[in-house]
Length: 491
Image (cartoon, rainbow, N blue to C red):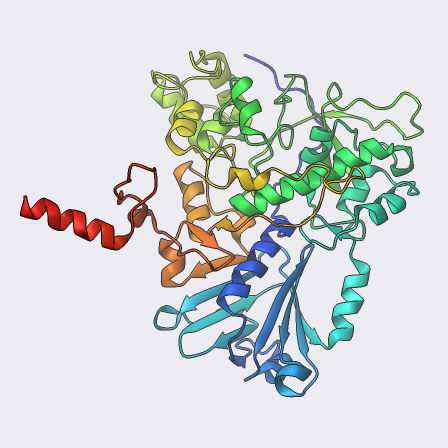
């Protein structure tokens, strides 16, 4: 049996803040669902009565996201000759903005601060922070937030000027919303790993090129999460080349580095667990940063980056006691003992998958990781739909920094479909989706939400209906198909 390394502390699997990409998904989806409508506004739990009165009967004109903050605009001088009322929302750890068909809407819950309704839909909003004000409120909040990689108006040059003068570590700067708006702990770990930068390196010790790499991966990973509805940081091509088709993250909550196989180290940084691979992210020799006191990573079952059973079987410490016993039972092994004993017993019984060299289970031809990857094609973001939208985030302005924003992403995985994706791989509903719940009839059937409005969304059922293809490779017009069917009947 492989002994567990000593660990002074164990990271707590606590809920995490809604990440910036999820807030942008809410903003863009609700821009299509709610903007342009006049709503009757009430506050079911009585905690937003004044704000509900100010927006009652007024037209919603815009929904905007900045980092982890959302702003909804109602009315305005050009709409109703009154100053616009802005509702500011910060979802916190359990907020949600749900949209329902009117005849299917549930009753409000004790946490529902705002209810919007018209003749067709009903919307419920619950969040840690819901306040209201004029444009001054928006400007005040906006000035305190840094550069958001998903906004077209983000200025990486301004951010570089600030970072290059900062004596804080880049690990702290990435989590500081006044610098990198929308980035959370999972993104921090993976962005710095992909950039090859150690989290403890000070901002003023970074070269312009190193900052450019950090900004590039910030934009790219935020765009991918916005498009897919999940934080998937491993490039599908690299996962395949490493023989790990189901790998989702390189180092976050991992004992071994997904790229080099070395030990991942963890330590506390501003009360949050920070991760690094010393081999892939070496400290600079001339750095004045204090080298942290590393700990061996004690992996845990994360609630903010849930992993499927197949992924957790690679590191049995992440399994629940009931899952450990079930797997041991399948292998015909004893199931008595505490968790450490069960983990050691399972580790000593593993054998190799012929496809990827990872642990196999109960006489399967391939391990559950390979089976899941082959069955779903979504674990590493390998779905071909929209992959072209995720390219083109490299330097495009001639000065070396990736262009920010979500331009070119016309489709995003719907909230319902993203939840279904996770269920297919054995995951529970993730905090990545908690802020967005679309339970309208369309939200239940559409796999991809069209953000541009010029395409008719297709359901899974409709996509299975194949259309005849003409000799030039194009789908014939409806009238042409009718003539062909009529000709075949006559024959």
